[in-house]
Image 1: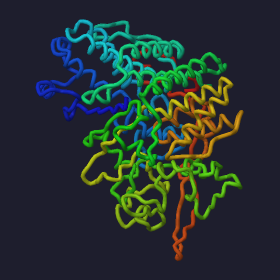
Image 2: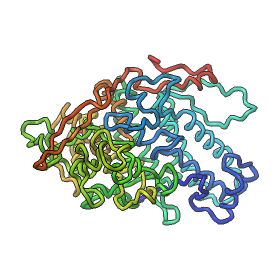
Image 3: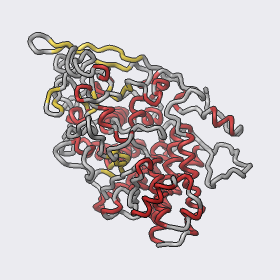
Image 4: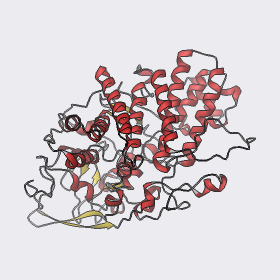
Length: 543
């Protein structure tokens, strides 16, 4: 329970649980050049090998995997000022097989190969059988994650369960179907659940647990049941998604997890330990993966505003009374647009007039955090907002990297997975129950949703947009729902704010970036570099 995941890059030689002799070993030889004599005769080194593969899991910006921050900027919830990870190619519809963004093909298959080597070698390693069992479970989840990541992007991909060598001549294989890949992923996760412990002691906190395997299965089966991958709306797939989510909920109810009920919602994303987190990736304050606070903070606090919320997202937050700002009965005041909003707005978004690090944020023209700022104006936000979710106010950006955890799975997601699946099965009362459990936590206390039918479906989708914003979900949600042709074909909007002599403000909204979504973009293209190596790989439609 309460797992945190510290993933430390090899560049700093700080892998979890290393002894002094293991550090010396890492100093003299990198993991990817271990010989069989080095690794596969020493279970401690095998564990070090497994530790290094955790980097396959989602986390903040880096060069190896498409990050949660990049996925946010490639969707309607956000913007990437410096076009990190070339996300503008998604924004303007210019993605092609040789003009890629957030391409994870080579990286995922690299980790899959590492996992395959592990499974070919582990049974021959002498050592404690219980440790070997646990490591097998961890690697099954990592391999399942990589395949889930691949099929979420590309659709069906080749299922490879052996480690090819330079002497192999039969490495060209066709793509398996999406269904075949999902069957493999589901079976891997079922195996992992039986191999992994429910929780860990302090020395192993952060490792993949039984709950993490179950949570990945919940997400994977929800995606498989969704319109993109289930065009015939096969209810059996929704039942499977429902069952997987309910299994996590039942497991949580045994004392493993619970919704965070503290008074401050934003602490979910800052506390190293809380009851809601099923699996998270811990930053070490040193490397590129630890620049989150710098990437998301306003310029006058020495942040870079690399990733910023859109006006589109800001407008999606309801009023505290549960009504949309477009509802004439909502009480929304266009001259004071940030008053009386969903409490999660204040925990997720930095806006003009918010208090941050002991002073008021100034996004108005000429303000400290505006593009006309007298200090560091080159890195001001262009949308008129910054992330507050994940922002650590105690972090001195001049001296420290981020050390909070990037959440991979948390219980609120599972509740919303279950609500969605139950709705699709016609069980609206249960869908409402779990939707409203998320909304009624102590730090939120939003009015209960009481609608039905299509309006309830819309409410579930809106809840995911708000509750899970900036966590890497939105990009895939609008694709699996087949709604991206609407949500991603709208201009990305921003706000310009001017301050009047009496201290009031004028708000002008404008298009920061025109956006275009093509039907092909529901899937990534199969990379041209890979098709040139493997002539059996067929391209996705419309590329």
